[in-house]
Image (cartoon, rainbow over the protein chains, first blue to last red):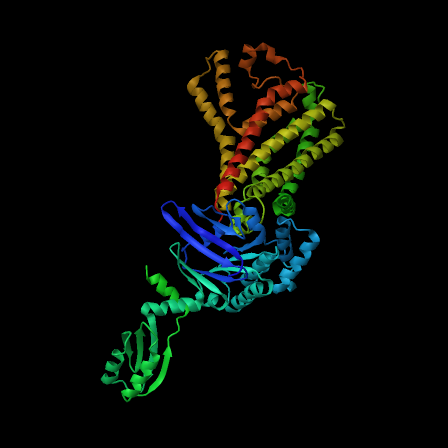
Length: 311
Length: 314
């Protein structure tokens, strides 16, 4: 891993009786796109608020580029762009004026700001509506303006809280493109929280799954896949021409097979290792023919469901 | 903080509420000067005085109230209007978490907003007072003396503090309540309570402490009045109207209302020769300080509450 941008150590937040975030340890390197996944109320937003210094941790600490978020919030906010879940703009101001206000709050020089604003608006494709009042924008446009808003301060780290919620599919892919562009072209580290897995899957280098305040899994999607294999959750889907008792017995005798589900001529064979070869051999030996054999790919969704059903 | 201040100031000046207020102010100034021009002559004939110009502010007519009455009524409204949605409108609009994730101290936001509201009010009030003065000069043809100018200036500061107090109440409510409807209604209810019910409560307590009837001695009546006045002073509305009346009426030399009974008990109060500005100030000093303190308390409370609050976008 390259330079660490985000680092949390035993980060904990307690509200009264409930533990919102429980001893979270995270490390995100420079230029990475990290997906922070979990169901609603898992503690994603609370973690983000602590990363920004908007909420104080009960215990533990978070550092952004080495700055402690509780004691040096201004340094953190100077290099971090944050797009909150329900981002809002001043509706009676134009897109440009809204961004201008942000550059003022960042004490940027007027000339420098003008350039940055144009650049940011261009990169999210809002240049044509730059001088329209934001009140007339669609939800997707506002979300894109939110990203421009984050880009305008030239951040090292961008934190996006549910950036794709409530916008249409075309809008989603546009937003995701902009996010990828941000990381690839500008080397910005992106922390992206979401409960919409299939969308995030496409653009994240690494994901962390959080449930009930705890980080239950972390790594690249392939890594999470293989972790599941070793837990006896490997599955092969098979369709045969003829299903006989002999075939069933042969399959059951394969070492490592833990269970077989039958639906018509289709079988789902569960095992704790890769048994594809043995399965195809058994089918042929039994006199039947395989029409289709494939390893079931664990999509993020299944990984996700698996972790949540565990508790 | 300056960025927040200028943005808020710009917002205030381009808002509909500002335009409506300016419209109202034109009416107030016009009505007050009209009333004064109609009635000052007779008023001065009844109570001869060297301070004629300042009567423009205190003279009421048969149908229209005096300028002072107008201002003590509209002052709180103006204050509340510029404060009640300062913070919670940003919260509901989703802009608050965006602003607070910028590199600025959280107090800059509330300081900038309070200051912008205060400056807007100061400009509005200056416009009202100056407008009335200029129209007054034109209408009655008398220039104010330096003592009168000083009194009007003190009145301006006093009004600013009073309206600032209501601005503080508004801002506090905007921090305390999530909905703008609530934060608009609560300060108005507080105002109405002080305006209407406080004097009733004061009267009730005075009746209980010192019951009077028509056979009562003047001393008892005076005592009753004193109790009532003291309790009523809890209300900022009373604080302001009493203080401003003293500042604008050089011949008032006591906080007490002059009643028949009072004149029997303290005959020296029937002396209506005007007092100096310094003496008027001495009388109203405590009022000024209490108003300042009340404003500070409101602001401090909203400040602390806002700093400690957790900002979520939902």
